[in-house]
Length: 373
Image (cartoon, rainbow, N blue to C red):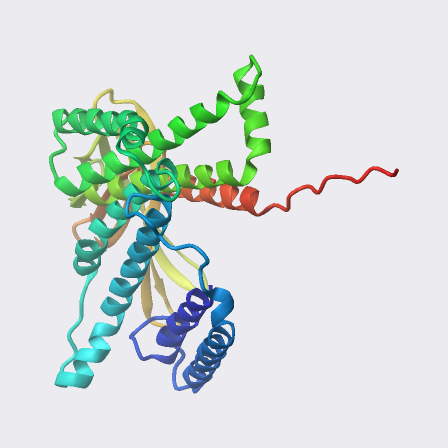
């Protein structure tokens, strides 16, 4: 917890101090030194308290087998630390390279995706496997019983995805592990329902959740992580981008959408001048009208700066982004940059489920009332 908080302060120090180039940096200020001093105080205090209480922090139990729930928790934490280190190294690499060689070398999005993607897939696997493994030591027969259904479900989904045309390894592994996590939660839920002597499945589920709220709230967090991972994987692996130049009444297609351009609308106020383009959205297959978006370009008079106001259409299937890159008034041509990000909203649905599960797990337990006499 201390290290997590310290890293948030360190990230704030990097951006606000101007050490790393950022739009959030304060111009010509000593605020970076304040953050650095506060960070040093936190780390020194944490190290001192850890040293003072080192005997109390020593674990009473040792990991007896690699195939145990304790080992799964340890591996899970090691993977999280690896993701943290890889991300931190990518952020600090320009600073380190400039200090060592005198030339700043930067790393971009491909570095973080290449390094962190396999780590996140491993994290998903451990998230699903951990609750299914026995404490202390798991036997081969228990492994077989616990992992048979989740493994078969993952294999079936992978085969279906390959048949549908998805062949890239990372998306396949990611989707398979998300299904694996959901299947393990389902298996655990089914096991728990057997212990509740109720006929109605809803009342049985409610009683089960009430009896073991912390455990099943944790499983709810696992489901949220899996859903968010599906949203991230789909939006990154299957997104479509297209640069389009159109005149009024012109049309173009992207993904499952047809875009038809309307007239340009010029307007201004005391702060900025703007041009907005009416863009009608139709279904590519049925021709059904889906709505109208108004991507916009603004020029701020005082600051002499231009901004792009992105138009967005959100649905459970995908998000459609339209950005007006420019407009040529002489030829009456609009230059659009269009993105289709599949399942983007499921990232936020997954995050919401994670928050709900976390809150439910942190609620205080009811203490039994003592009877008088």
